[in-house]
Amino acid sequence: MNPASSPAPREKNGSRLNRAEVLRIVRFGTVGALGTLLNTLLVWVFLSFGYNHLGWHPSDHTVVTTAATLAWILCCGTNYLLNALWTFHHWPPHWRQALHYYATALLSFGVQILLLNLLVYLIVTERPIETAVLNGVAVATGALINYLAASLWVFSPNRHPLRSRQR
Image 1: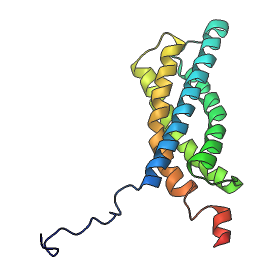
Image 2: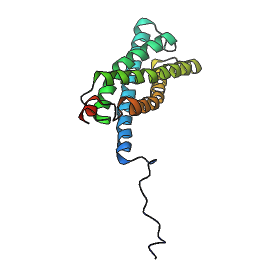
Image 3: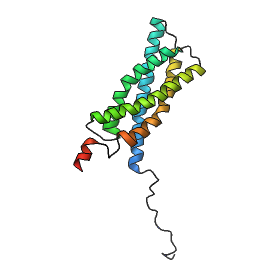
Image 4: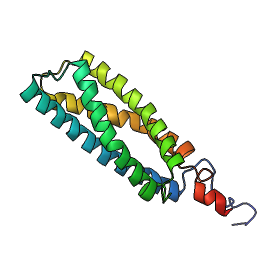
């Protein structure tokens, strides 16, 4: 075969994900899955306690929102530290970076709460576990927004305070 007629070797396409980006997505997904599981378990524990001891109903929007907010507060810090250390390798964390992370997490939490309350409205739940599962669906849905914001704004290579000083 004539070398001039053979196809040129494929160059790395800028639109394709490289191995590092794929691994970062997998790590972020793993942290997110663990955070979603922990969040769902916490919501179930809070709702179960309220249902069994305080007379709360698992489809009461105020109760659901309160339980989801408490779980989010507990899980958000853990997810930030795991993502900073393991997913994006931005260690040690910096207070400005943490503020950015919490701002993006709050945005995805807003989406989560809206979706959770919509699901609870559409699917009336009678048991805490049912509401906790709906919360897990809502948390997982907000993960895409959180990943995009974390990648593009919070953990962007140009935004790391220590790395920018080294340049």
